[in-house]
Amino acid sequence: MKDMDDAEALIEQMGQAARAAAVELATASAERKHAALIGAAESIRRNVPAILEANARDLQFGREKGLSEAMIDRLRLDEDRLRGIEDGLRAVAEQRDPVGEVVAEWDRPTGLHIRRVRTPIGVIGVIYESRPNVTADAGALALKSGNAVILRGGSESLHSSQAIHGCMVEGLRQAGLPEAAIQLVPTRDRAAVSAMLRAQGLIDVIIPRGGKGLVGLVQREARVPVFAHLEGICHIYVDRDADAEKACRVVLNAKTRRTGICGAAECLLIDRGAKPALREALIADLVQAGVEVRAEGELADLPGTVPAQPDDFGREFLDMIIAAKLVDGVDGAIDHIRRHGSQHTESILTERDATAERFFAGLDSAILMHNASTQFADGGEFGMGAEIGIATGKMHARGPVGAEQLTSFKYLVSGDGTIRS
Image: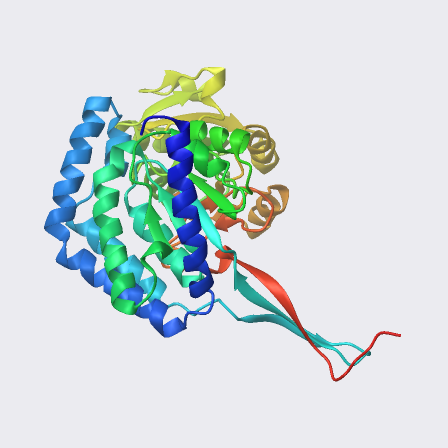
């Protein structure tokens, strides 16, 4: 792509095709959308070797680009992950179709009957980094909710995304739905991102899924509405009344299961009133697992830790690194999270329900958990089949963004020759 004019022409063409497809999708039957998703899932299964070959090319590109191991892990596909993509498509296919659902209805003394019903947003733009599975997740959820979607994946995942996108298009074709319902920007040129952000009248909402740099760029430059997905600075607080065995198991999982996802714990807060043996066990387990524990205060005296720097708190590492400090009970944890969190996901480990309720009431993150790993911050784990991302803003969608969250609503008002006095 030579310049910005070429990028704008490309997005203009894709946007016009998407708007035409959105008109057809808005009235497409649930059965046709179901058929398209099942067809896409079956195509993924048939094309496993080709997708893995494409992914190998992306992995090589990513290593040459100097991506961290955590980012390489986000990019990597294998047969199990492809099976997960296939299962996700089938799960979305089997969900209740949200379009046309009556959210509320009531009668007025004037004789009017009013219904609030779900309706597609129109055309969604999704800009994401690294994880090629987003191509399937975003395409499936947009289709299920009756929206057309324009996908712009990360430069490092281009070949994988193209291979998966081909499977999505095959599903659309088999179901007799417009192929322009799910489009993938066919270039690594960043000018296409800027063109999408300015595509007023063509794209109705932008959803960024990636790191702080990407999200910041989108929020600065977007001329269309944005579903915010800020950093996943997730905290896990271990209360003095935590069960030691549960706490050690959950903290280790929250940090180490997959370090490169937005639900990975980045900061461990321990109640100053917790028994020293619990503190020591939590830190020792992390160190033994290969985590670099950047500790503050008394925790910095424990074996294997390194001293924390001030900017380690409020930082998304996406790596085998965690910040750790002691706090003065649940109120100290709440205060720290309010100052350093990104309103993504926080977890409290305690056997006292009253303490958990105080934690829940005192914080306003999109997801709050009690005695559970932050790694569950995922639409699939919430029963949504898949997600486009975790929205951390407070307008429209919040938390995991699934098919239902990709709808707006309209009012249907019925009368009988009714006039207003």
